[in-house]
Length: 115
Length: 112
View 1 (tube, rainbow over the protein chains, first blue to last red):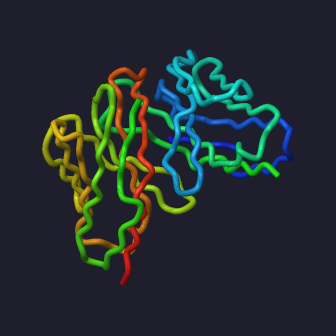
View 2 (view 1 turned 30 degrees about the vertical axis):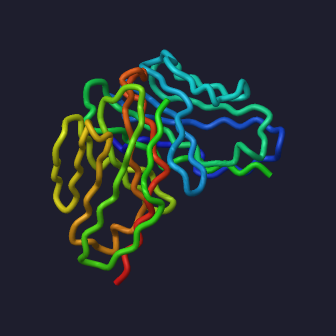
């Protein structure tokens, strides 16, 4: 297994455009998380999937953000009508139920710059 | 809600010992984790404490005191490659699916 993969690594977009990021978790992991991280801060929770079900979404997440995980495999995070405040690193992580002592496995992230 | 506090930066020399403290406030608590993140890299899991006491993994150890809502990460025999940011994170009993809330991170700078 090659770990958690995220695509693209970098994305520069103009304000108002829509962007979509993809995450491929570790294949046997049933849980998938999206986090956002700005410079000098810790990761901030956005949303969480168990298999294909989206079980929790941060109250901080505006309606411009949507995530899917069809068939419980890869996941996509879409941001509509991007704003400069959306500029951040978007991290995906996966884990397996019952393996708390193994923690999350994070991907390398997608760095979004909104100009 | 949850909040975690950790120092923003620590500087030490190679071979030294560094302790990164983390205090937390949660509505429920179900474990303290530590992650390391090098500049431009992904956070990587270091340790998890669900019970009070010290967990040792090589040069790194992690401690938890649930009664004090406090934990620390101990980095021993510091090496240049240990220069990174270190995050504590808590799992909330009320949170679904092992959702973690992260602290703001402690940047560790190791000097020769």
